[in-house]
Amino acid sequence: MNIKSQKDFFSGLMFMGVGAAFAFGASGYTIGNGARMGPGYFPLALGILLAILGGAITFKALVVETIDGDKIGKFAWKPLFFIIAANLVFGACIGGMPIIGLKPLGLIVGIYLLTYIASHAGEEHNLKEVAVLATILAALSFVAFILLLKLQFPVWPAYFTA
Image 1 (cartoon, rainbow, N blue to C red):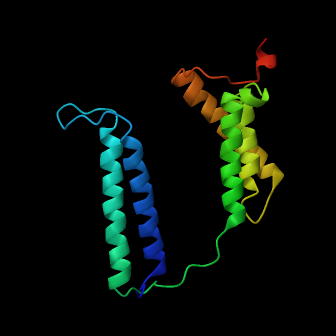
Image 2 (cartoon, rainbow, N blue to C red):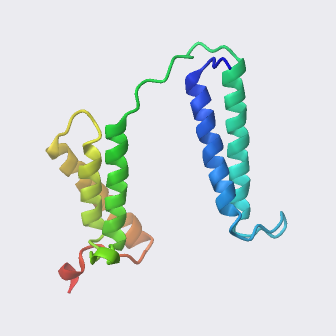
């Protein structure tokens, strides 16, 4: 098998994998039909479309010669680790982790931690810029989610609001 474009080949495999996962996950819900869609209808349709798109991209990578058919570079583990860690910490800040006794820390603390941890994914790290960005994100998130949408989740740690 001669791969003409590694980038397209691996992105096609990724699309097929994500599509198959969505379709498999949707099988646990009621699918329904076109006139009366169930909660699993959209994820199933999306999963099938992603898998078809991935198959087409993978096929094209095997058949059509492309200009940008370079080899894939080395995998960027550092950014991947910090971005995933930042999102996990943010989720723990919003919902807490009762299994270890961590109470929710709130939206504002979560955004500051998310921004600080994610900033380590890049090559440069400027604490002043991170603080300014986190402040802007926290203010805009507070206005959007708490004031405008009136979502009910903790904004501050519980011991600040007592």
